[in-house]
Length: 151
Length: 83
Image 1 (cartoon, one colour):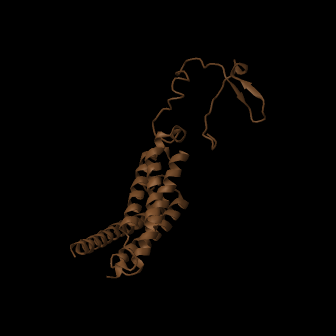
Image 2 (cartoon, one colour):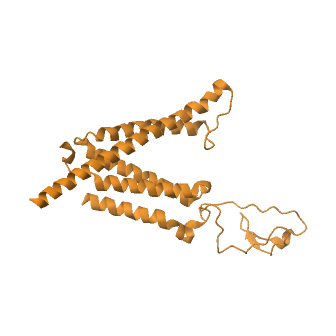
Image 3 (tube, chains in turn purple, yellow):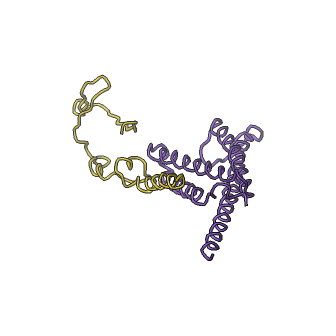
């Protein structure tokens, strides 16, 4: 009986941790997405104000175009994670694909690190890769069992 | 089972991300401000005379530094994909 209660408690704590993870990461993704989108707007605002915008890295027009597209995707992704906080059968799938996305983001950073093209940001790339892999692991470990989020 | 497999893959990637800088082959040109131990001291300092060396030109001919003596020489180093 006690063992069953303990298992139930562990399940509830895991579900709560998963919701916090989804909410936290989802919120950050929405903010990051909007930040990427405003890069595009800032870059092209130079055409109206005549001033050269100060961007964190030397973007060109196509780079901000791609950044804006990635930003919009991040807003959608973050929204999906925020939706997963409510639970439901889709919450598990959102976590699985979020783990995959974070793993892919880590892999392309590691490739960028190996290639050496971004040598000025080498340490940042590795730190980001490690962080994203840890987040992916958290999604894998805290992901509820099938039908677990329906409760 | 899927959780175990996913965790193993991610842990492997994590080990790679942490351990890559310790692999000499991957350290070349990737770490900022780090001099390679195998070439440190191989080239002289500014103002010092370079030791003679031989290179292969694009058409396969051999080119010695000594053959260019008396001419102005510009050495340009560029990273290639097969480093």
